[in-house]
Length: 303
Image 1 (spheres, rainbow, N blue to C red):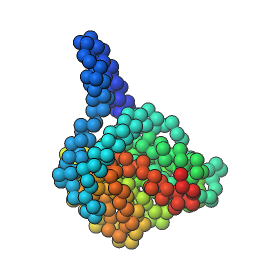
Image 2: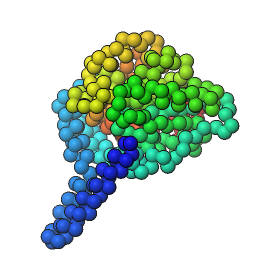
Image 3: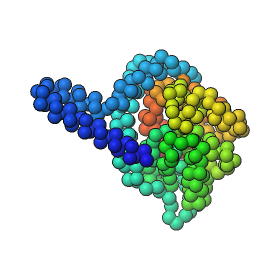
């Protein structure tokens, strides 16, 4: 579903941009104005991201990380504009099915597999660069697309459970689970609902709003409301979790995360919390430190 929505959005942006170029040529506008107008229509997310970063600078508490500088925030904004094009304009709408999951055939008791779980309004296309590198390193992996897109987070648990079972059947080992943003909450809910601690080799979360996020106050969907700060769903999940489970988590976060802030909301008490400076929300997935940590833990060489 999300792929079709993003296809429609990207085609609409392209059509508007081409229409602007034709109209501006008819008006004999100078080339700089034609190009600027086309870029604005091709990147409507850029001003939205600018607002998010302004709110982050104004309201975001960077602790436990140091406060980001204005230069860091500007660099993160520019990188996130680029990642927006790549992720929401190309990989997710058009290439989400381009790469197949990589499972050993026949099933073997070889290397630990990796389960990739995306976040809000995303699909498995988010992980395309990861999937190429994991395949090159001969690491078994499986990436899922969570449905329904705007449903309750608990709706995703059967998909996660089936994917874990599939990876374990293929490798003979519990998989390492890597989750971005909302995906980390879905994994925590799955661990709790299925008492599944022994069915994973650990969990790595990337920019996950473990304690909610300030921006979710504007959310209308069921899963968006669950990510509000101190939501009943989050409080119930945290209250039910054993403390020992969090020792199996590695949580990557950033003081320049424009979606999940304050920064400490992406950390878990008792987990291995690791800060990546000057990195925006989707951009976190592209940080090589995270993929290299995954490769280290499954016994593969760094990329």
